[in-house]
Length: 543
View 1 (cartoon, rainbow, N blue to C red):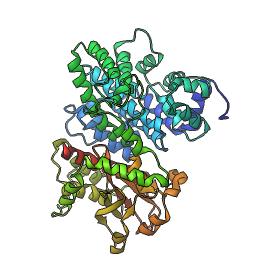
View 2: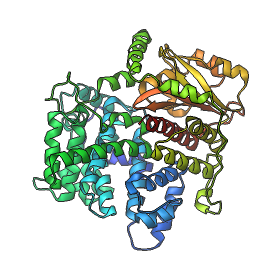
View 3: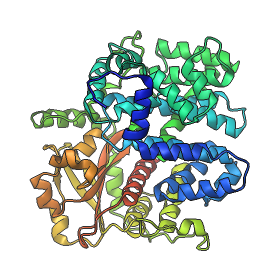
View 4: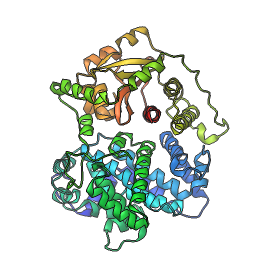
């Protein structure tokens, strides 16, 4: 398909299904067709999920999350998750995860990151509007809202002339997403989404919401209200456009404005946490929380904010000439949260806690699957222990770091793991904690400069994890600089930011340099999740 040519809706749908993401299309269609009453559908769904250990781990995390609290107790297997939460719920959770994985695997643009964040927030809000409904019905609302902008997300996730043209039009927010699509593609995103929803059998609620009827049903209305709120929520809960949507929500729920405001704030907090479980941690900071306030410098007439100024500074790659100025501004921002680094420093000077022992049932055949990681049992057990620490909001920093870094080495099979913190002047990453087969010479070299553009400085500024040396990072190989090669002595490694209260305070680093073993997808997913959990634990500790 020529990128300069405008095509019909059918052309773009065929392109997305057969050229852009054929494997995803096949998976989605396979999952969507598992709807018969035959008992074999449970084993088929279980088998499909277990093919991907990362997906397995995330599905189990969500099954045990606060969203489904009380429905199934301590769920350790996919089969039990299906029995306790329902076949449709687990199928749709798996389906949406794989769609988002496909969209997020590239380097998302600014607009795409914002829209993914909005989609998560909208989905959680829509689900909350039908909190009295049965769980499968709530889940259909959640998935329908999450996929409302599916065509837009899919088209913008590509790295070609079409996506670049779309992003250029959307960058200055002078046109709507659908108008930009008409100009570039010859049809709107909604038109493409409608046809995709039909062909991929994504559900009647999604189809109704995409058609935006004048008198929508209750479920479709919840989808549209959730989406409307997500587009303005970053203005702050006191902003006039946000209040106007909450008034509609209060009427929909037949409750007071005050109660509706409290409910949407609660849903926003849950949306942040759920995004991490779904594998979309890189957009978590773009979802408002219950404490988001209005920016007095922004006009209340703004309807679709791209992001807060602080987020823009953090996420935009900067030329090396601007590095010093950025470091100074970040240092000023850090002053408001003074003491966090000191808390970690104090914890690290204490006695190290003993390594936790796995407690999962070793006869559980589902969790014996080991593809790409050293010990899936141990990985899942560590994630459960971290989730408990976060839920209890009582985090022993030593214990937490021992769990996280022990998991990176013992469960994922990484050989060298480092936890580093940003220095007070925001110019250097200083190593604080090592795990694995680490030589003294390596330790002495691990003071990484943040004044040049490299994988570590980008991880901090963009709040994004990187798998340097992988095929997907070929276009950003320049981030592995000569200085990094000298410090690390190796070219394939993971780097993930430690994000506390939306601010990156340091990074985790991991590699298999000693054996020169290539890294894999499952290790990357596990490393990313453990890094996210560390940030969530430290954030909970602040609360």
